[in-house]
Image (cartoon, rainbow, N blue to C red; front, side):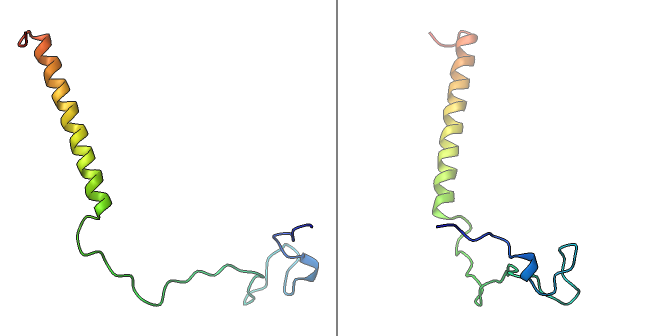
Length: 82
């Protein structure tokens, strides 16, 4: 079984000009359409989603671990720890 080619046959396409374009006012064959939903999408109630809160907590914990490690290393360099 062979699949159909993704583009229409130029010989059987109406209103197709020699260069492959269409004449003014004609719609290209199989033209893609974009449309939005009929109803507006509801906005989120809060400023942060649960995923955003979890991400923020993970970033803060990582930053605090990094900061703690940096402080301990600096204290070791200057001999403040035993």
